[in-house]
Image 1 (spheres, helix red, strand yellow):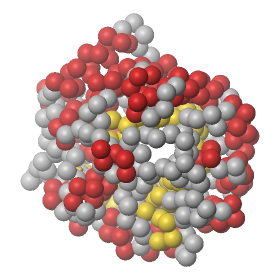
Image 2: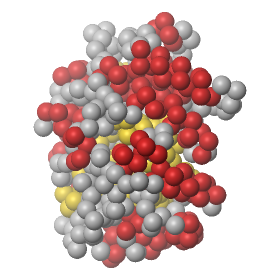
Image 3: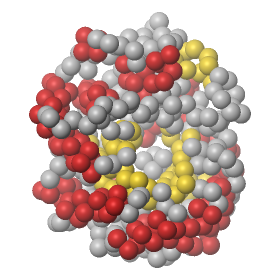
Image 4: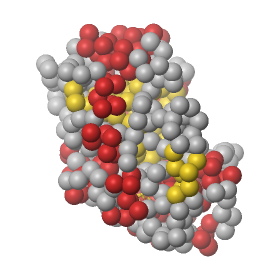
Length: 409
Ligand code: SF4
């Protein structure tokens, strides 16, 4: 393993079986948008059974009880701005030392004054969705006219009042060729992070067209190409970490990783769009080594805990057990932390400890969260080894991979 490999992926500084790195809490399922890919199958009005303010406080107390480094908390929905106690929840989490971020929908509720209140309550970051490069494509994705223009305005406001901006984009076959133009918007808006989500056929997303594994490989390489322009993370494509490791230290990238027609088109359009306006190249932000149930967990609007928002297999309820007890004790979460038990290619892949595949994709396709991830095209090499390395912190010795052979893209 070279020094470049070591820097290609960020490892957690603690044992992922003991505490999560990030927890997403769906504070409500209510939302006024009707997005075509909605995981939550959002509803118009708030569920009377959703966690109350007091229960929310107790959940945040539980999350803070992990102690430093405390998990990052993202309040999502539905639309979290549907909750009138949102600023109170943010302030409570902030008082406990939690880093609080928000993932609102762009509706009339997303006003400058509410954003200022949330910033004053301690919120650090806001993520907004941009799934199309223009009003026509974004608004049809979101199901409401005018959302594209409102999103651009809201993004400028977020930056203007000093909150960190994250842009989220869901990739499907319908919008994949718009990615270079979306990237241009991300750069112009000054986003700190671009989070690119690879569609899981769940919720309303069942009716959309996901990329094939080969197409996804090309897009992931293009994203890594683009990560010198803005910090990029992927959601439900952990094999981005495999690609980051494979590419580390390779100087002749195009020889090692064949450039397919999709990546070629994305690169050409990116170069044309940014000609003469490229930002100064930055060092790519290494992707963080978390996966469903391994450093990551999701709490739904009624307090049920899942390994991820896209893996609808409940592991407990915070109404019955504390979050730390669920996170540490759930049998399924423990299984998800043991990549040696995964099925198919993921179970013997030399990247399994640092990638492990999208457990949500595996579940959506086969009904088994431990099955092979069909959205990855990598063929593990027989010669691949898994090398032991020691993580920092209290964790047990963990494993790290050596670079496998180049994967044609
Ligand atoms: S085969 Fe599975 S573990 Fe290996 S890189 Fe692909 S998704 Fe990751």
